Image (cartoon, rainbow, N blue to C red):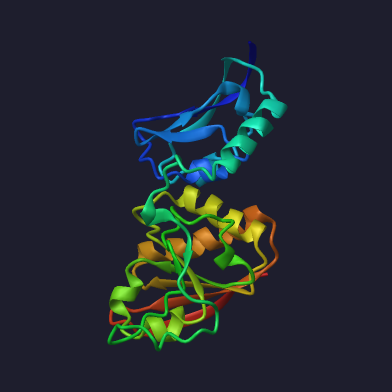
Length: 242
């Protein structure tokens, strides 16, 4: 055994969503009895690629005595896992990435009285994967989660033809959101970014999150900052950034 960095999972915080399983390139994590667990120390490289994918902040890196990381053993383990199609791995159905329609595809065939313009799932910024295919070359909408309730024409006016992530800048972890959005920006070439929030003071934190994420990602881009009043009317629009 050697003193080295290795993943530590707080089972009290873990909700078993399975995002860390997908994020671990070595296959070192598995959902067992509804909780994420380290399968073997030799499969964990200690770099912590899984940390940013955990919506519950249940994963950290600790330095302790552990078996040395074995790259060849990890590759063999991963190959075996892939050959079995990961049939025993649990993935929460509510967080599985899905495209609901392709860009430009009509929503007219929907059985709903007013067709939805939502093009993918999930939408919560905590739950989305930065590598999801619906972020590639996307017009991304970062929206405060109260907006769609106030804005009656939200789907056709803003959501149509856009990918979306939602969150609350007052109640949720802003730093987590900044890092997650920065990962999306680093990993995808976005066509545009639009930030949509309410006029109440706390909601302007979403603009701060977008600014900080752009800085953290090293991306050079501007974004449209749109403010809605409590009746759902756009009361201000401005371009923010470099």
